Image (tube, rainbow, N blue to C red):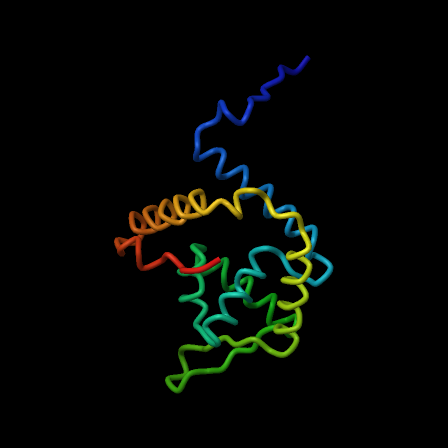
Length: 156
């Protein structure tokens, strides 16, 4: 008979709780937007590209804390779905990524669907959000050597 290794959330270290919360939230979001051809990761890419209006895949990977290879796969998939287009730079080596009209529409539909989801209490707790944003900034600065404040986005 298998032993029950269930531990209450209060007994878990903070890093494990954050990981579990992120995975559970990702699953919830993925279920909600999968019919649009999107995942949480691809949605974050679309949101960031929309915010920046155009960007390079390497910059996008850095902003979203994923490897350039992973971001390349996301960009390639979104491009194959007609949601992104690449514009070659003048030097011929770099490419700027932009949303297409299909990408704008998919982003709008996803945001509308997610707005309808019941929001967890933590999304409305400013202290939690602020502490988490600072923690992410600190972890990023350890990884990159950049100031933690360079990464903290302002606003909701």
